[in-house]
Image 1 (cartoon, rainbow, N blue to C red):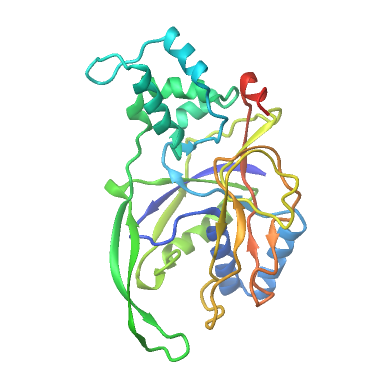
Image 2 (cartoon, rainbow, N blue to C red):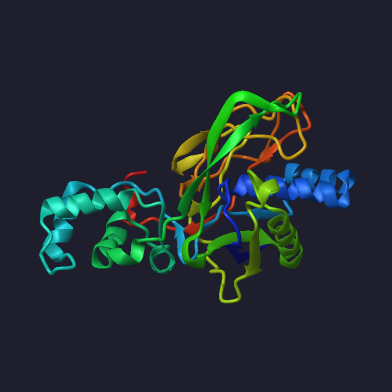
Length: 326
């Protein structure tokens, strides 16, 4: 399947992060709503049989890529880097060893990196080479943070449909500053069809509180994107969430998280919560993927509710010194 890059522009605040599994689940929900249950079942069967009609990434700020979870550089490597090159702050003051190590701590917690450095280093990734780029131009690594807003809500009893006494609570939502946008990657053979479905999702609203106007977005294909052909590279940068019934085949450098999801709109009014499950996070650097299908069953008392975590990963290669640690 062909890789495409899409540009997602929020048109309202949103309450649910734009992550791959939620986007995919809502696309399937809207498919059933628009085209019927038979069409939904056919698409679910395609995911179960290992022939997914599409894969989606989680969203990342425009012009960035998820930061790869590389092995940390050792103090001796950083000392060698300082011997080869001196670094200065904005005022021209030379950075001390303490300053450089403090900057490395900030660098190692970066969720995203400039896409220009991903394209430059994807064939020879190492913590040290990326840290060098960071020290030379730290301002390029700063992204505009989403503005966080809070609003008050009242808890509604699902059985009676009335307000619960003492059920006042605060809910957070986010707004993209200065009209900023996100990049979303998709692997599909029918990009116009997928775009049409994403457009409808954006018009109706995505995620939490969409019924109150949140989660509205527009989306378009990025005409400047050219997918790199690098099938010979042995590593994969995960740009979506990933899970499977059996994760024993997972190898590489990765982080995990536990998710307690909720069923889609209209499901399970008495108990909307799914059972907790483990996800491999975006930015994980993998040498081996678990065996699919990437459809999680038995995550709710209702057996018809499933979770799809179809992975999307980009080829890359670790530098030889990083491979020595594997």
